[in-house]
Image (cartoon, rainbow, N blue to C red):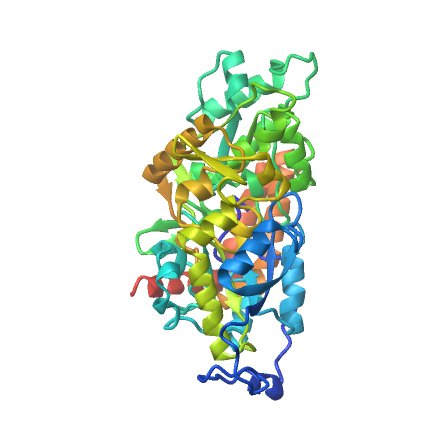
Length: 515
């Protein structure tokens, strides 16, 4: 989710990974002669059966008779046995599956650096693809960051689910039609945003005579600031951890984090933030924004249209406008993305010959032809090209065609397709989103801890993160004073486990830079 911590943050409760027995490991023996596990030669003309566990991010998963599913199987000469899970419970399902040892051929891992994933890697659960994947040119065409930032101790254990390096990090998206109605300029600074949030809350921009349009709508997680994170990063001018010389500094130790808490507390106290932010779920947050009950929120660029699509059914002139950056004490800021949204790991139970067939399937899936089918459907049926732009048809909606379904498996390297386009988007919004992405590249700041590992952090930081976030939430709501944060930071600095974690992260940072 946008605004989530990278590095060792944002890790949910983890299950203990079971060890594979010697007999199971023996089944992983490589087979160079194209033999299956039963010792029979595989028929090259017979469709390759591939089991996949992944997520869908649309309203519902596709069924087996979905025309895109059928077309992909025909084009790739495969039989896809896909288990789809909602993003609301995917992590839990993935953890259970990983702990059981009963893995599909391809397993989507959204956080390659979660402790149980790293443990699985060290136990040999997944194929090491470091030297193999370089032979698949379409996969290697993904941005360099997409591969570098999934490396676990400088090795590749999965096929990157490549994404552009801008467009996903969540900075504010605002109701442009409300700005126009209230004669307000597009906000640039934190002060500008505060005044916009205040006006949206108090000046009845929807004209219904009620105070039911909170300036900002968002939610936090149990262990991080969630959709409130951007303010902390703007004040720190850092995407989570901050580089200081040859060191990196944890965000809780940065002064901008304190400033952000004060900023949010003032906004909450004045009623500019949805009062249920501490318990709000993502689905409820989206429903509120689709209903027009919120003026500012933070999310990926393309959410401007995904949420607006429903809102315009009742408010045809509504407009969600993604900002290019937010001006903070350190200058214009927007976070740079890691270039991936996880990876598809191949189970070591898969024989080597099939592993290479799966890589070939994914390599072909990364071609323009297959990626176009997966993400946009078939021309003349699901879209038509009008003035150089793919315009979705009603059939695309009926057939559940979008980047949020099969595009989660077979991605495209087109940054505009991934970050500026969604099914049904009008050309004017698509062109505006493209400009937003180009602008964000000028100011984007990377997270220096994106692929760093600390065993101490894996062990102790989940609980520390929860305590930290619990206090942050209380300070925002005014049930704890800001002085409580000062005391917490001092205790954190003195905590032996936290100090060791910081040391390990800095050692990993230096090692990643060849020092």
